[in-house]
Length: 87
Image (cartoon, rainbow, N blue to C red; front, side):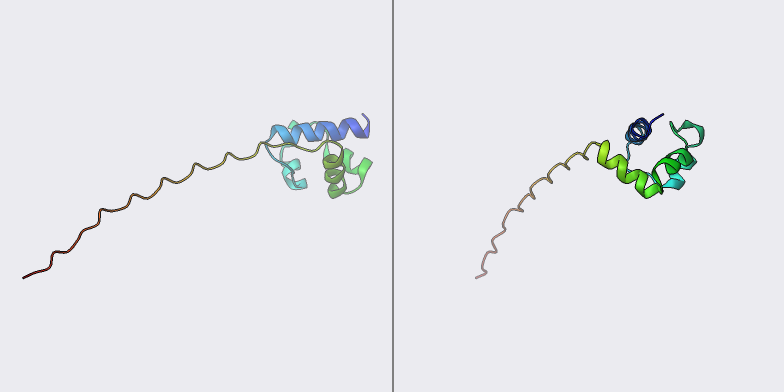
């Protein structure tokens, strides 16, 4: 497996989880579900931060932007009460 293939598999895996990035601890916590073991990535590319930098450069993760919140309803003005002057 080439570096490019490993980075692409990592990018697709992180995108499938709905995240932009993962820490090394989070990646290791996935167990055998990961496409490439972390030590292979670090052996080929150096540190975990370097792995993430290469991944973001070659195959950036596109996560959907959160939906825009609905605008708040306009406040309803209370009817004005006019005070009657006494005699």
